[in-house]
Image 1 (cartoon, rainbow, N blue to C red):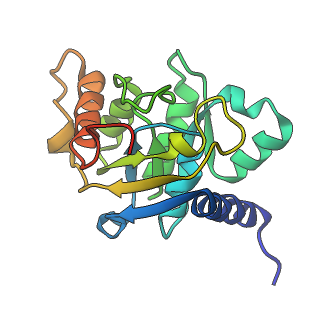
Image 2: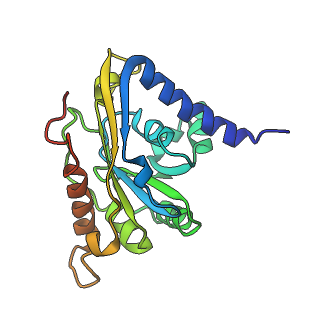
Image 3: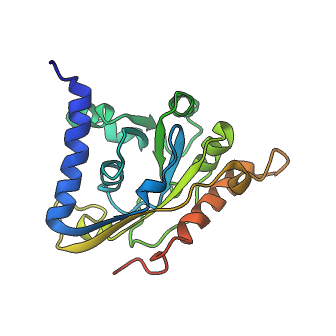
Length: 214
């Protein structure tokens, strides 16, 4: 049987990230069994380049994720993350094309990973939410699964290309949020922004979120 090359790359990257984390860290995963079937948004805090493949490796199905377009400039790395179902986004502007692709992925029943902060934290502390996560949630009406990842920045911090030492990494999946939980309604003057803030607050309410370190 001929293996699909895209599927093979996806599995290699995600399982490789899991193996990487288990070699250089003590990995704990909690709550993944609560993830709903079908279309949903996975919303996580963002600490490290490890976050997308590490979160993906904790799930029993393939997911898509949104990545800044500049990451695709390197032909090799760009080809790899495209095979991992990444959607290029022009950060800092309303990228209608990326939004349409993301909404189509959700409409087809897929899971989509997004980081409400929009970029990696320098120190592990959760920053303010951008409107993108709330926009996709409100337009799609799908459940949103809050995720808190802790310790990834101790293994591979921002601007590092090699692991910096052993650490404890925990990926915690929370109970799904439904539109009634995150969507303030059409009449709200900042509907997308408020939805993103509610999603980020749900991430902050997960255990272990008070302190960025271990």
